[in-house]
Image (tube, rainbow, N blue to C red; front, side):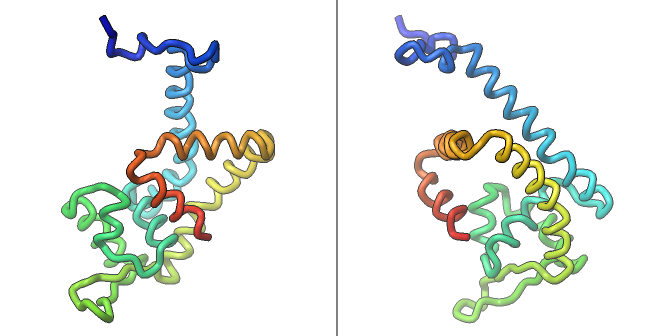
Length: 169
């Protein structure tokens, strides 16, 4: 009789890092790391009256100038309604510009304004410093392993597109 919960995971070739307790530790570390990784931007966002959804929009529009709303929806995997609320606020407050597409006038192409680029930099600077410190302390081999682990955490059907997207710059 096969068990379907995580306690049924057997170590792979004696690799202790695949034991249930180690997997749970890894999951917990992800939660703590995300909490701390987002803490600095969260404080900055509060001064603007924004939340993490605003941060994600600013990040992906900043990384993909000229992207369509449809492309942003696909990346964020949120409803049109929830994106609309956040995007409308960012546009109204002058952080994001929307232009009609040259081939399809129904498309809205998104880009950061000068004000949006400043916010992008404010939000990413403490995160870049945190990642740079961790990378320096871990070393190149560990960074390569970390990137491999993150890539393998991505849904398989989207992995290639996501990796292509993050490697383009």
